[in-house]
Image (cartoon, rainbow, N blue to C red; front, side):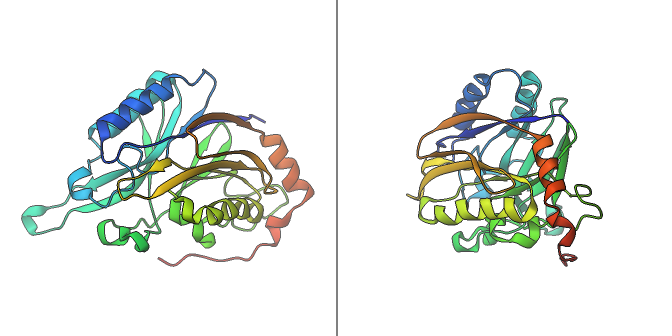
Length: 274
């Protein structure tokens, strides 16, 4: 069973300054040693958590996606994080632009998949500026399945819930639940608690990558990026400081746990109605 190595970038972000953020992140990415499979950036890594998509959005052919393609190709890694994306609309017919908080899963060959944030943070008016997604994204790499979500999605456990297994140790939808975020310090207890809870209830690893520093609205973020094993035990956590951490997860450990404690087979059946 192949292990999988992630490099997590917990960093300050330059408020609404794409060029500065991409230059800063490029330097950090170049410093990561060979051997990492997936590099994870925070939510809205090129701008910070901005409610100005009209000024900041790009389409999927824009410079930020092109930068992700170049970096993934040069480092021969998968690169992921979320950015502000505008979908093309027919303005001649009076259609309004549509903006998304979109996570991009960029492969080394330039191909990509994407996930649009399902749960928009109404407390900050995100739902007034962006459209919600409707489909989950579960990516595959080296025999691992990774469910990719964004920040506020963490508060809604049904959206990340594994389906019941048919046989012990078999049939789980995913092995890693990964969140990218701009989660403020004032609610950081919920961030840490829910990441561990999602690991325990889904018998999977969880990875949460948050930013640090103050944003353009004066909101402080203390990071607390972390990795939890399927029992909720923290394998990594970093508070307040910028950090670049590389960690290797064991598939054998995961499968052994699921075989010895086959809780997933007892889960409730359900389906999500859009």
